Image (cartoon, rainbow, N blue to C red):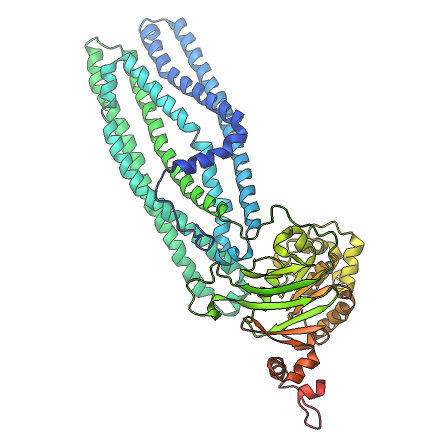
Length: 614
């Protein structure tokens, strides 16, 4: 399934898929020794389970009826020993399986998270974060249940079941057949349970994923929710989803509520048949009392693994549904990948060029669209930024400015033409080296939980002094030092304790601390006040010296000193030149400038804003 088609609600139609199960079992391969040890302990556990009823038979027939108190004490001691051994064996088996399951979950979550980091940005535009979180959390937990309570322990149930059947047939095959006569009824009940619970289980999984997606979206945007007074409406929407999830759970509970009491009734019917037929055989002297008691105990233990196997079916079903979604995610190809043999960049000079670039967010832009405007986001983009020079991209919303940046940083790949850094196609470079040569400052500055200093470093080995120098350069040092712990002040989730302007200043410091050869600013000063913007402009004039800069800005006042301005319109470059040259052309740029400053007071002689600026 493609990334675009990936969807939480796509549950597998089958409750068992051999291919999926074999793929899941590959995660047990590194832990073969632990699985083998657990398997051995399960066999021992099954044998110990068979010993108890037989020892009861011996105690009654050989010692109680004979009045042999000494022999009875010996049998009782042996019975107690088997119970102690069963405790030790079960403890060891559970510990080994649970530890193995935890290691498997660790490996699987590591694989999913690593793959998520390798996927291109467009994948996250199409898939809600809440659903992706479900892949890493709830679905992995469901698979863990298969490993810890399903794959290996099912053999223990089978061994116990076959062992009990063998012993009962050996002791009295006629009474055994009487006991087994209710098995067809059990299969009828189980088949009904499986059919009904399968659909209800899928519904539960679907609605829990929708709850996660709804919560993630609305908790992240809580300020907007409260500002527009959507609390009541959102509560009603959540109530609908939550109610649907509860109803699905109730339907699932119904099947469980019927199934397990039905199994108990069938077990009671089996015991009743044993008492009727076996009791008559005891009275006739054809069966010992001890054997009758042992049969009753074996019958009670006979139904336990059968009901356990039904539960294992539900675990298998849950694991199949979860693994289907996990492997769909893991099989989603990463569109932006490192080349097999990347071209090395010994020293980055910072020459950026777009050569006849055509780009569309649709992976197949030539199919299905009715017009060129719908097919292509960027059309024949061609420009060069020499090392140390600066270029600004301006234009109306949707003109394609941010798409240009996404191609340079290789968040996406072009369909036609090429983007180069120092003459090398960015697709031939290692993405890690490419991105380490760039610094991107976005309009929405994203901060992580941690300290102020760690948000500037972002894991790099940048010394403290360089962190402070970068903060001083962008005029962030003063407000950082005024914080309670300075650079060691803890930043809350998404930087909620800092103002928008402060977060933007930190993103500037972050970019500059990494000393990039190419600095990309995407509306980077739109969230700061005029005074802060003036400070940043003075700092940037010094800091951009010797670096290549690409600036996207709606505030035309912030780009008047760049070396070249590119005016974009509907995915094409319509005009290019300096600020003064573009004003003189009286084209798109001139109109944008007029619109932006139409309310500004003109000079005393009535000149237009353009004339005054010029």
